[in-house]
Amino acid sequence: MARPEKKSQLGQPPMKAQIKEAARALFIQRGISDVSYGDIAEVVNTTRANLHYHFGNKSALIEEVFQETFDDLEAQFQDVWARPGLTLAERITLVARDCERRFYEFNDTPKGRNPWSLSARVRFERHLISERTQEGISEMSRHFEEFVAHAVKLAIGEGELRPDTPVRQVVMLITPLWYFGSLLTQHSGLTKLLEHYQAVIDTVTAAYGKR
Image 1 (tube, helix red, strand yellow):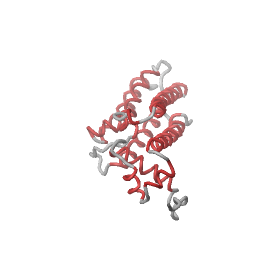
Image 2 (spheres, rainbow, N blue to C red):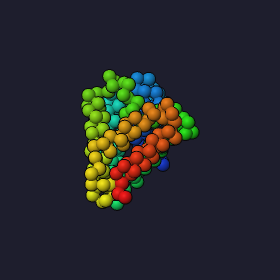
Image 3 (cartoon, one colour):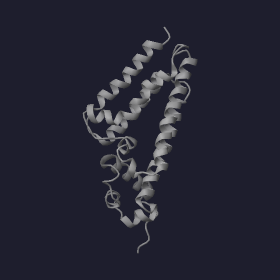
Image 4 (spheres, rainbow, N blue to C red):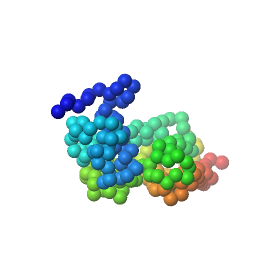
């Protein structure tokens, strides 16, 4: 058997990164159960043997794809919700823009109905992912709420919001849009999701903003 390649062609990411990127996209588009090693190998223009060389079985690949997603999200949470110098409205807008960017990875127009969130897609296939990955999804949800709560408290401390602003209630207005944004756009398109984000900004500002 030929030795699997370890280096990619000039200008391309390493093969292992290409495989994970292709797997993530296919998992979002088709669901985990409908994606085979052959499908991923075809997208990356490699062999199934090469996938086995890098990851072993499909379950291990799924684990790595999710772990990379978790790591990326943790970094994003830090950058958006903990970075000093931003208003709460600006932080919410950054999240909305990130949703828009991910939406257009899988849709050509604002009216597109294709899914674009890995965690949202896998909610219907939890039996196909490990307990570790399921716990990772739950942990990311907890972390998101904690970061949003931190940002609301920062807004209160900076005088953007009133001292009596109910932190938990504001968090509950923001978090569902992040949890279920992909599902919402599958029914109503991107514009409706962005309108929801703006409505949250307007509502929180009107109810608790300093006058």
